Image (cartoon, rainbow, N blue to C red; front, side, top):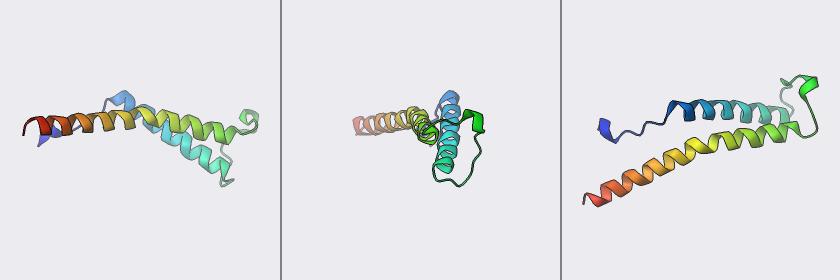
Length: 80
């Protein structure tokens, strides 16, 4: 069972974590729930930029997991 485990690289996990934080912060700013970004760093539509950047940062881990799962399924089908 252990050899079937998909283990993502650490750098993808770190980028995904920062992307999740950025996405969450952007969502909170966009919905005016919290104002955690200093006024000096704010510009027009900064919340949408944070949302977009966070979403883009989460894509590599998602692609890695999908590719690994597809490779695993292909490997299982080839063993039949």
